[in-house]
Image 1 (cartoon, rainbow, N blue to C red):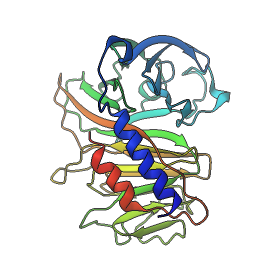
Image 2 (image 1 turned 90 degrees about the horizontal axis):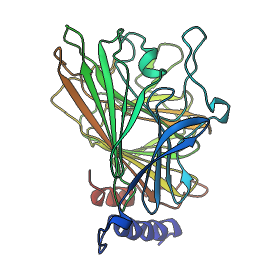
Image 3 (image 1 turned 180 degrees about the horizontal axis):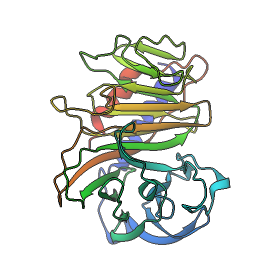
Image 4 (image 1 turned 90 degrees about the vertical axis):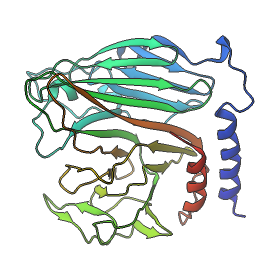
Length: 336
């Protein structure tokens, strides 16, 4: 068997161990919560267990600033943004980090108070915290993000709650926008009856949505779509209902996202996407689960949960010889 497959199986065994098999839960080995300074920000919240650390920041939108396993942070940050805070009198930036948002992107009003503004943060239990936005006038909603780190594994649940504080029904959707370290390989399981002839669309040039792209760095085989390098245009969209994808990274980690999908509901991103990937050269890769259209009555809330994992996986060498079936076998055992 090839070397990467052997390493993968070793990683899978380790993942089972980190899931808590044969571990006894005690106060000493439970996930902890603390307040720390990080990236130029005071009062960030740290969630930590034996191998995994999560840093949450509320100063420039509610973001994940670190998601690391054994000291390897998979979140892409720009040191020049350290300590940056939103000033409505000055041009804004696109903050890096483990971001979340709401959509659909082409019709939702601009909402800098949600995307860039100062939030509040609070610990809500061992290994758990909450980030809370202002009540946004532009969209009529308030966002609450709750995070829970598992006691023994890298599993991090990220729940975004959309609360309608207006007097009108709102029709927004969840939109994950996590920036991961660049240069990796995306593995997306495909499901039957895709509306796209090549199983994905490519945005660009300009406002064009290319529904028949042909890119040498994107391939479809054995029921999986793989992005193995920088595509011709960075933004891609898929309509898979498998409810997960994996991002294989050069630091020998696999960043996994699991999320619910709803084949019988309307997805109101323009192309009806369940996933978008923004693969920007070797700098970063934006991993984007997309939720269905919600009908949020005045005073009511809806939620959407992404479950994240970090698992050891030897990054493929020359030729990018990924075995998607082995990735899928790991996913069969990594549950929500």
